Amino acid sequence: MPTPSMEDYIEKIYSLIEKKGYARVSDIADELFVHPSSVTKMVQKLDKDEYLVYEKYRG
Image (cartoon, rainbow, N blue to C red; front, side, top):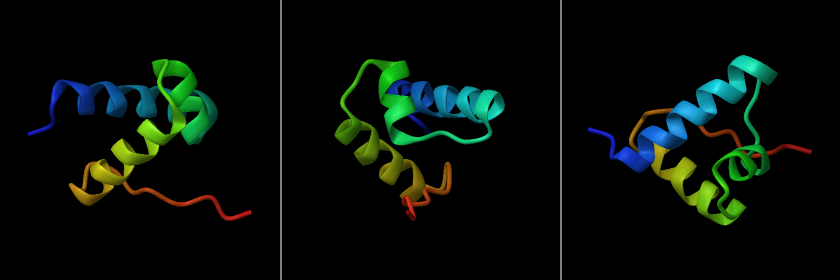
């Protein structure tokens, strides 16, 4: 069961994907007013718990 914080991230990620077609760590951080490193940690946890699939940037 996701925590309230996890739900906030999932909702924001969903909204960004609906609007832009993708959700970058920097975009999520800006929307949630947190540091990008916090987003990375949470996204990795959400990926590990199979709530989403985290794809690292491939530039």
